[in-house]
Length: 280
Ligand code: PXL
Image (cartoon, rainbow, N blue to C red; front, side, top):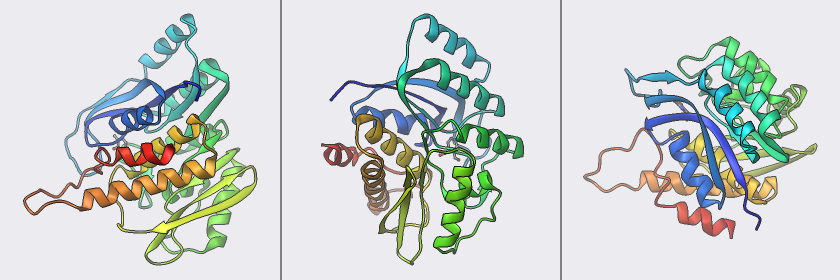
């Protein structure tokens, strides 16, 4: 297996099992060399904690990129997640163009919404800028909320295949080449992921064991990216990532009696070995 270097651009939430604290161990477990560009440093993530700190690192981005260019440092894959400002989207686009190797795979997780709502701090300008980044992604990995914001579509919790087809068609209209749409559930007790690649539409359905567990979007996108850049095809990567997220949720739910509820993230670490097994 060729040794690949991947750059991931997302925030450091110091505590909270999301973004870089999730992406780095998962990408490493996939056998990749990791490089990071932190978009912001927060004391915790913004979903459920209050009073968190937020240091925006937008200004550092072009300087870091220039240094990499001077050192001729290039990447086999670039994977973006939670970004700290609208301006950063422009910088990410430059980083794609100037630091990606010829065959660089660009994966964009438009991390900005869940349950039909934008995360705190995001606004319509950010959504508009993110629409532009979709056209540069080889793989776009939105959940349904993000797909709705990107396509100006009404968010629904109950829908049919026509609604999902419409979302996918509008996302391709933005220029997204391949789309991995997560959290697509047509029947009770089941959920799944739609893999729309080179015009082909595949659906991987699996059991649904929770109505949402914070951080699973980042776990999903990281495992998908890791498997894909390591060389698996998109459907296999999407399936490996979905199975791994299920294992993480099961692990999170299986606490002993004296343990506090683990509400802010998913226990992905104890089952990381299962991801490695699935990759081999
Ligand atoms: O998991 C996505 C995410 C990443 N980073 C920060 C967040 C969130 C979701 O709320 O708040 C800071």
